[in-house]
Length: 242
Ligand SMILES: [Zn+2]
Image (tube, rainbow, N blue to C red; front, top):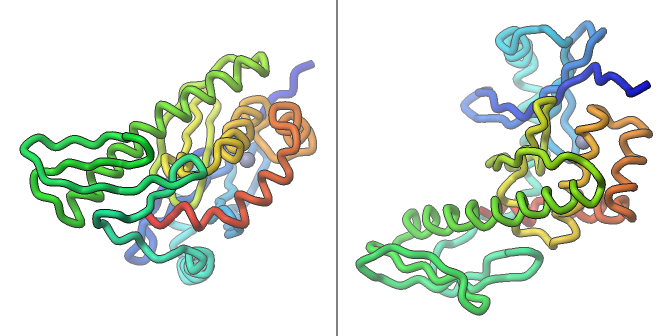
């Protein structure tokens, strides 16, 4: 008999203190209280299946100081933000691109032989960042959706709908509507690390938990996933410079 999933996982953002905090909301049938956990992935909130989000976030407010302190410890691993200027190195698919900035009447960003060439009407920190991030999001969606489709087909699964997220704390999440959300920043990582994250979310389409059966499914989809997972967890702050 197929296993019935009694849990959902959703990536959400809430306002806490003066900050926006990304978190994964895990709802489980039979769960009574609300629990908060901050680990290498950021904040996870466990809650009963039907508790309104407003009530959950009200409870988070009561643990605000603890949550903010834990999230601050977590984000201390972040690297310094990038300086947006010509010649800077940008991480992309495990390698680096050299940013080339020029001025022109028509704004345009393109990848040419290892250089990300950004032509802008008024090149400056904020406009360079906007243009480069927009390019990264387009490149990320193409790569991530393509890999999700290929990996799902190879595994005999119906390809999910892929959406981008701007989360800094989470690489991916999925829900029971077969939507997989992947952080566009993931496109900076090496392709095999990206594939691991996609396989992890594909496995959640069968098991909405981190049970032994879930990890067996991850291993089926992504042999040797333990090494990749450990590497990603040890280095994920490197992908958060922008
Ligand atoms: Zn997971």
